[in-house]
Length: 166
Image (cartoon, rainbow, N blue to C red; front, side, top):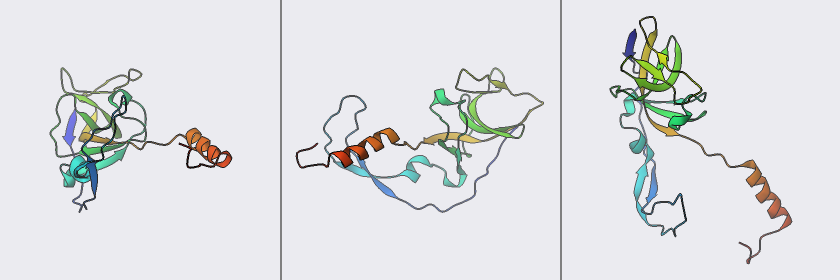
């Protein structure tokens, strides 16, 4: 087995974009009134990227990690400077193919998918294996339902809003 950690990252200059972070937490259950108090501003670079010169992004293809909350078209933030630990989710190359999997070091090294439809891959001496980095964050774009958007458009066309409509 040939296991190495690579650093495909280049030093890049980052700019700050500070976005308001509200004191109130948003309810995922029953709604609570929003007070609108801003706690402070939040820079996504500072929040998501601890080592800018050792960080890269990669887009996900496939569904082998859905039980870990990683879905097709997600963007992974990968840090090459972190030491790989047992059960870390890593971006690796196995026999020349890039993959994202959970890395298990013992009892034997293997790449484990987080979807029961896929089998773990034991890493042995015959494999060309390289770990590029550890997944630290996931970026996912939430798309609006086209059915909802078209329903709203149709409602506006047939029922123009008035001051009493809500």
